[in-house]
Image (cartoon, rainbow, N blue to C red; front, side, top):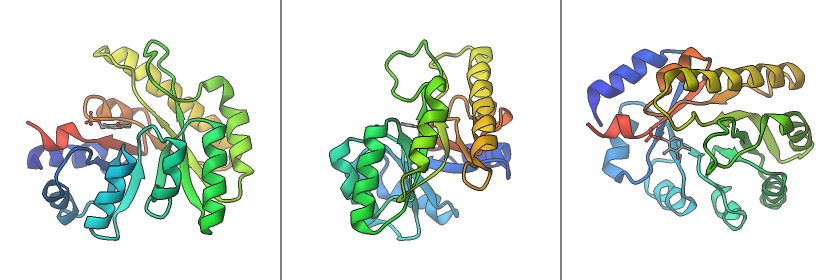
Length: 215
Ligand SMILES: *Cc1c(COP(=O)(O)O)cnc(C)c1O
């Protein structure tokens, strides 16, 4: 843990956004430093790591799955995750629904959007399909759709980053209006390099790894 980076993040997000500490590739000791500082929301992007870390670490950690989720991995992470942030297709939603029903669970998820069109390698839904997608997922009994996740564009151009985050927030607000604030209340956006802008643009959860762990 880089203590002054941690302080800076806490100062910046205050009570506006929740910190999701991204623990991918970090040791259990490194993760425990954040746990001991009071953090409980941790993010992993690989199913296998999520499973092994959850087994080794305290049970009150609220694990967030943030990576691309393969359908054959859904079953193993379901009993562990607090939230799947990377729901990017109806096919995946249907698999989650089926496995959650079998396990007698209700799973919290975020719909993942891809709004920075210049980044062609990224997965996620388009803004055009947002309303129909959310409507379909809301019908699934064992899924609780709580909001959306979005990545900033891969650029140092702050204006472009702000543009994408503003677009994400606008979409979030219209979905919230349509589907209700109690249900649609999480806007997960902002990472090490762009979390300040994300918070200014209305993020309610930032996902930060590198900045917290590396000089
Ligand atoms: C790795 C990762 C992060 C954290 O990125 P940093 O640049 O290390 O802060 C956030 N979100 C997702 C989906 C990631 O895979």
